[in-house]
Length: 151
Image (tube, rainbow, N blue to C red; front, side, top):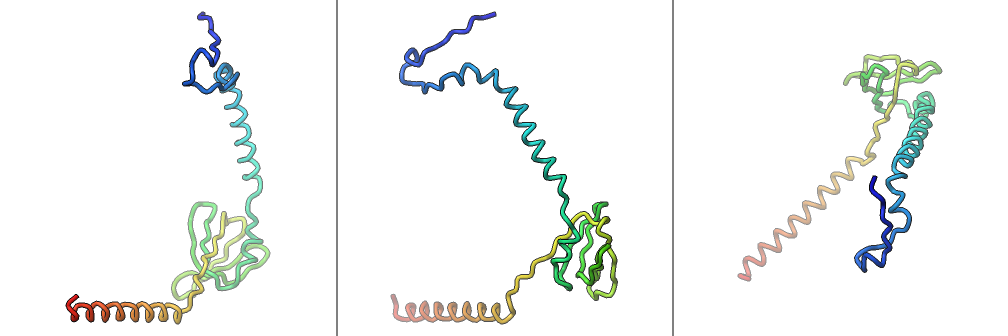
């Protein structure tokens, strides 16, 4: 077995930053740090998985008529509008005509995501388009005027 040699920072000149005892013990500490880090991350993951989302409370907060995406326990995704909520589950209206309803039990659903509306009225989009048209007309008039002046 080779004998280890302790090197003092002054032997290395000014090219090295002295890190103290961490250099000598870093290879010994790696397995211990790896185990501690693994345990810390595992405990964190277990704590997160112990508290599943309360679907009943999530669905109760959503307004009737809101578009929902429901992920079922089997992996299927169902989209529709919330129609009603009771203590065992909720009903959504499916399809473009919204005539087909489906009852979904809270225990059969894995997650529920409410689609957020943009809340931007059509009048606002028309106003933005009108302003953009005016800007384009002003710039075009300016360019035509400069071109006619010859400069």
